[in-house]
Length: 68
Image (cartoon, rainbow, N blue to C red; front, side):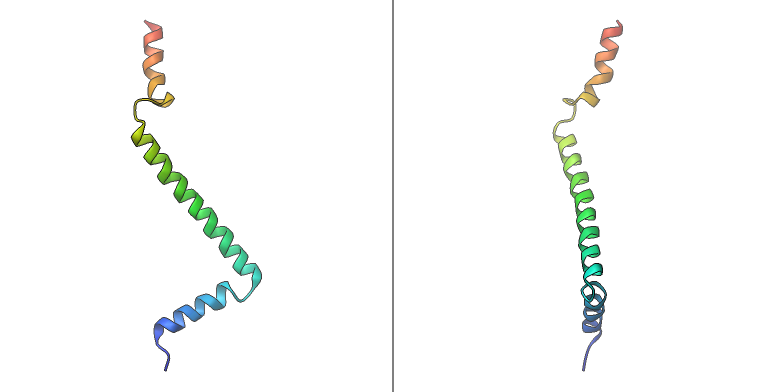
């Protein structure tokens, strides 16, 4: 009567929603993982679009020019 997909969904619901503490913990962990992934992607996009115009790119060039 039940297939494996239903059992998989039922198991996830039983683990993550049955207790409020587990539900809250799963939300906090998911939000933290999303924040890390989002920050990494947006930083990479920003660095790609602004390559050569940021302090980390200009610092070595300016220090070399001031030494001369």
